[in-house]
Image (cartoon, rainbow, N blue to C red):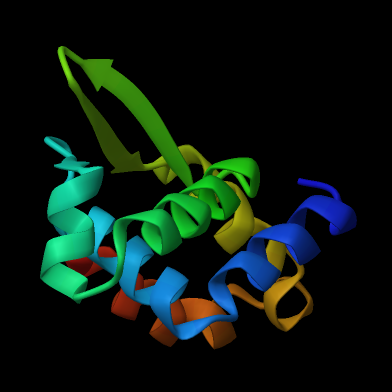
Length: 110
């Protein structure tokens, strides 16, 4: 991931509603959620939710797929992985033992 892409992704997450949306999408992997359901659960108007989902998608953190009349959104875990790796790429100047607590915190989530 390039620095510009990381800045766009971090900027997309630097807003409360979008951060809530992304965390909700991660929670509902691998099935995803309909845009309307996301808006309902977060109590956000659908047009506002559309804009937020678009920002997350352009940042490489969400994907959409049309299913009949619904658009299903999913967290883009490849985008999340790329952003996370960008942030920790040079972790502790290569001293793996210093990064062990970080790795241990990330491992149980999946």
